[in-house]
Image (tube, rainbow, N blue to C red; front, side):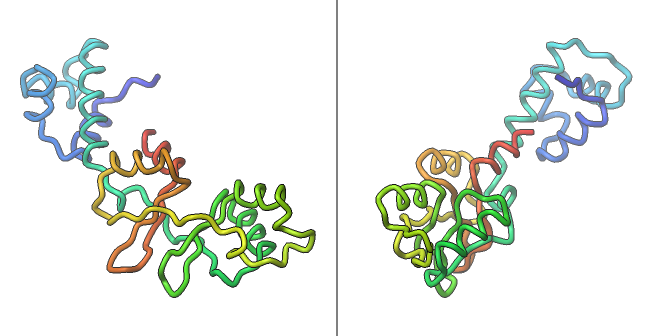
Length: 184
């Protein structure tokens, strides 16, 4: 565990959109104590730093939206693509699922699990010339860029990914990895 520097505390407070008074009130300290910690003129106890860091992390997470953590551009395939091409795309980009988009509208997805299931039940023949519509799964849920991370995390418990849509167009994708990466 790394102990944050005074500059890092100040930077994280500003990123979280909090004033020194906000942090002080939530932590049970005076605003002048927070100011002295940020300038490095006081050496706080570990328990004091833990409370401040916890407040900053909670505030940052509660303010985080889909637009803040989404990945762009979205790697996607069309319904006409072959499974062979889809596997190539997944390998090229190091992804385990890919949305299927027709004329800008998400209509389904293909995941590693769907490919394995198709191999097992014989849907995919050795040539893999079938199109993705033969193995396509239900599409990813969609959210607006302003959707808060809490709702997104809930959706990811049951889905491979969440697509971010703005004005009827897919503008980003959020995976479990994106949410986990946001914690660091």
